[in-house]
Image (cartoon, rainbow over all chains, first blue to last red):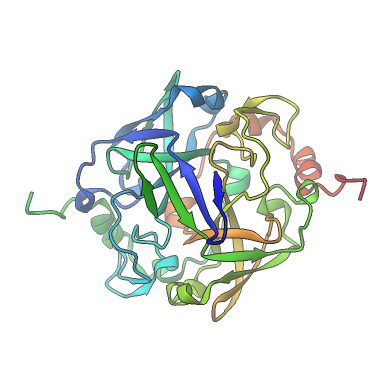
Length: 170
Length: 170
């Protein structure tokens, strides 16, 4: 990370790359819970391989990445799951002021610097910025209130979240 | 975000700032679950206030921020909870190749562009990069296997995680 003085900007470097079956943004599932059948590879550049020691003990990991294909920043969006406008920070839409994405994927195996994961909702070729372990103690919070998402019924969420009916032109 | 060609670097701008009672890294709780009694303020710069619309419906939010006081990058670390070395990506330690932090905090209230939150494990003055809603559907994953963390007993985790016995010099 390099701080650029006077404008409070922070520069981060790609530490690896995500390979996935998703080559088209409009047909990519919107979250890992709608993408369970999709496997992908996370290739961490060899110079960072040592940092993966013991990661194979975790069943789930956070991938943090750049939404490198995100469109123009918007502050108000209609999320994928509902036709109502919300603030960008109340959604996971990619066109954020800082297009940072997080996905919690299942870690199937590690071979040296390559992780095989499932639940991949990430475009092929996405630049990886960080990996963190998902842990029950820190991350699984019970009894949350989930804003507008609590209004979306499960069937609608699944239909829209998997995006299988999207991108009919292709 | 600005892509810097040839070196695959991505620049992100601060969108706000986190104010917290924690002024010393060595005494800052290591995760929100060890910091329930600490409240903080997240001030989103006014130009992004519109992006907060409807966030107040969520009980918990992700804060994504720069570990601006992180030390030199390390690939192997002893995490706070255990005296055993692990790869940096199998821990939440700040001295990561890209020092990005995530915390899931409880959202108590919003007043215009200022969020009051609890469970603050973040240093005062930390530059905020993004906010995302925490949702049960996407983020609360049951039955995970939690690597080396599953070996840490609850009492040790609490004693070390709150860091109340740390920083005796102050």
